[in-house]
Length: 120
Image (cartoon, rainbow, N blue to C red; front, side, top):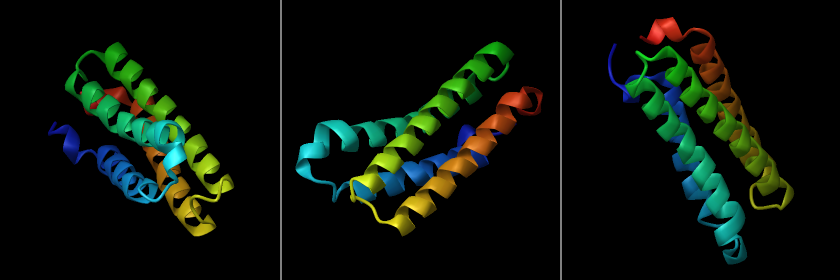
């Protein structure tokens, strides 16, 4: 069935995490241990949970559980993106692009959760 890095959801989640990393380099220093750390952590966690889920995909319940974790982290990332925009750390164009990518990842995760047999 391949390698987790071949999953479209993983590729997009990794892209989002890297874009967030680059953008957050310009966040103010006082956000280092709050917003910057949190948004980086949640976006990266989507990738790690996807990899863990895929590695244990033969165990359907575990697979779905880890995908649910990824989905939760994805939603958290969306909220941190909203905070980033509302605090004027990212502009509307960046927010729209990143949010659309994040939403697309969420839809892919939802599909995987609801069709686990296609990944076994």
